[in-house]
Each structure stands twice: as C-alpha cells, then as structure tokens.
Length: 103
Image 1 (tube, rainbow, N blue to C red):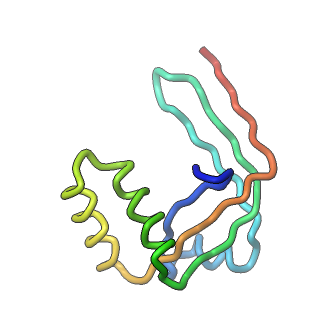
Image 2 (image 1 turned 120 degrees about the vertical axis):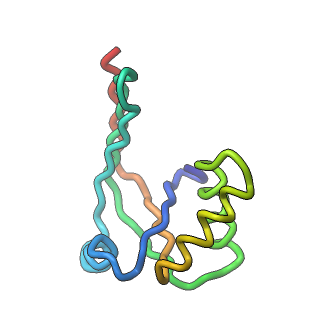
C-alpha cells in the first residue's frame, strides 16, 4: 500500500487478468491467518499497467523485496516470474475498506 493505492503483479495470460480487463471492479480479502483473527476486505477498481517503466519496475521491486528475506532472494523470484511470461502491475484504488478483528 502506498499513496492510498494497493499494488500487485499479475501474469498477462491469466484468467484473472482477462477478467480485470473486462471489468475493473475488484474485491480483495486479506486474512492474517491462524491464530491471528484479523481480516481486511477491500472493494475498488483497478488500473492495469502493462507497459514497463522505471516507476512500474520500482514498484514491482518493492513488492518483491517486501516478501523476501534478502535482495538475492527477491532477485531470484523476480527472475523466475519474468520467465513465466509478461506481467502487468495492478493498481487498486480502494473505494471501501472494512477491517475486522475477531480476537
């Protein structure tokens, strides 16, 4: 999450990508997992960024680093993802956010 938006990458040849091209509305549920009983539900619209730019590559790199312990692991993951085919950056503009804490 940055600048009030949520970012993630998606493969261009996936069914999810084609669905978002047809209909830019999205619902996300982020679950903290057991035993943490918190969730966030987000409804909004997406912009699909297919064209690579310094900005989109930087955002993708930040995402990769967020989920890996070292830069080396992030680079390996990034390389593996690029070998799977072209991807797009999904930029979610939230319109409704609901947080739940069941603890």
